Length: 432
Image 1 (tube, rainbow, N blue to C red):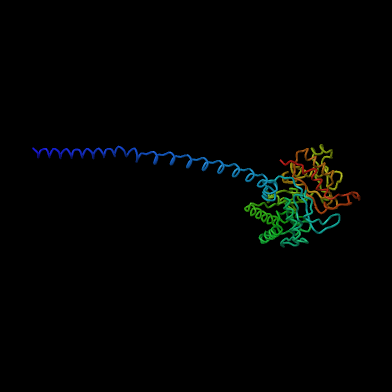
Image 2 (image 1 turned 90 degrees about the vertical axis):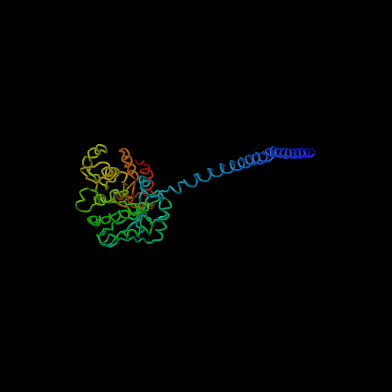
């Protein structure tokens, strides 16, 4: 009996111990979920990963004071200020782009010839002292003294000419070399001369930094069709070479009036071969309305009625009183109206510059103010808009004093009168 009671007591003690241990373990399990893995103070606390003060605070990455402030990247005072990139004195000057499609393809022109050998009733004006109303200055002359000899330009002071050209360029002017002249009748070249002729022209153009070449051939060289063709091909080559460099090489011509008749192309001296070979390459033509020695157009019926002139009469450049009518008729019959009686080669008005001698000492049939004014008004009334005026020569326009006129009379000529006459007339043309 005593043994049985001992066994029962031992079983009771074991049972009590197990209950205590199990109770303690479940107590621990029920307590940990609230105090360790899911406590909001550590992984899910809003003060650390989602607090707005650190990653999304507007004071740091999205503050308007730094990346989007209008005072720095978009301020109008720096990149778009009109004083710097678009000032007209710098990028839009005509001497930089030099493409004829821009201003120089339509702007009104005052062209003048310049030389440094002097003479009566004229001044040896320096290039830097030329009146700035002149747009184009033709340096005279590039010429050859014998057939198949390369032409040369020999000014008295080459360095002064270079300085003058640079100055004129700084003022937006064009400077060309004029080839020929009265002493250039031996401008004769053959196939073997082509490369040498191109080099000779470019040597002068590059040395003086010139803008192109003016053809002023006179005399017997105008009968040499081979020479005309070779010269035209050389000028076309140069113009195309410059075009590849985004530069414009100007080609102009100054024919005397007798060489403008279509009939001269087949025989004798003529500019018609030059016109046809250089079509689409020349920039303007400036016929010489002086030294014609009684040359002039026949008057057609409509102009006879308009001007009160006798039908089929001739108005020559020697007629002082009808100088305006002479200028007008020659311009009209050379640009907008083909006259069967006169048979002149037609030149587009926007490529036509009227060439007049500055006064009588400069060339027989010289210009004067009333004649240019009346001619301008006649052309304007007939809607004939030409490019402007050319004169021989700037040296005469730089003179002031008494000069010979018609009928053995003297008149007062004021310095830069021709430039002023241009400003009051053809400068006002609005090109179409």
